[in-house]
Image (cartoon, rainbow, N blue to C red; front, side, top):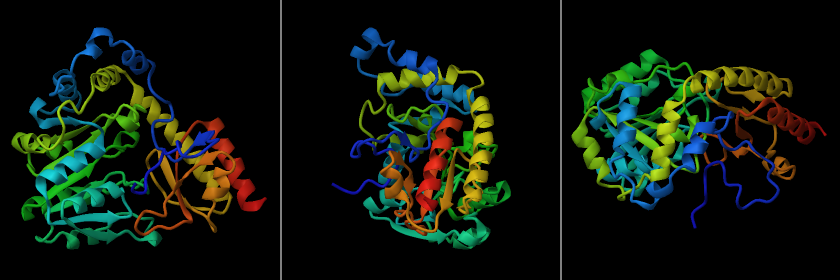
Length: 345
């Protein structure tokens, strides 16, 4: 069994009372979504709609795109794997560190993965040097905006230039915006019609705390391309329950506005507290923070029932780098007390 390189694997550990390794919405799952999950009845006895018709219609209204510009899947990871299976890119470019599933999926289908190192001394920000790496040899680019695990947003002007360069080179550009709704960042959705090889990933997983339900979607201006990508997934990959939950989530009014305000305050507080402990905090803008300690603390926190995301598996990071999802103030305070204890006794 291959090693698991993501957060949330609490099943092999005992006495986990707080899981900071995941970066889902700290407000949890909306009550309306919880209710929708249990309201299936006879509907759940039938096969799911294989084309997610109602859900895609509501997504088209929410994001201002055509229905045939949307492909739903079993979470963003499912869609990443599908598009790599479909496109079979020979060369793939990603920044580093970033979400490992991009490189893993590309490599599984024969792609050579090139990485552009993000500099620690620059706060892991994506810089203009990335443009020089966008040669005509690159067939597909993965960008996470905001990046995971750093939480850094790409400068809008640079992101637009990257999209234009990829278009000019005939390169596919996949921008993972699964965390962008936690930020004030600008989406590339308005450029989908202009750049037919631009694809945008989104997911309900993070924004509505629906990780266990698995629901993501891919946006693209080329409907034929989406149909080709769809063919590499299993039939009925999105359950009836997940589709129903997605519809309920989209009907929630003001959910992300409340979430952004909550996270902004807790991120500020956590950054101050971590800095006061002498730790180096990456200036992220998402619902999680990357920080560095003077010595590994993963196991020490685990012994106290607290799981954080060790970043040792990320290219460019090591066992002194950790990512934490932002939680409620009470939970964040427990983490801070535990960190004080393991660092200073």
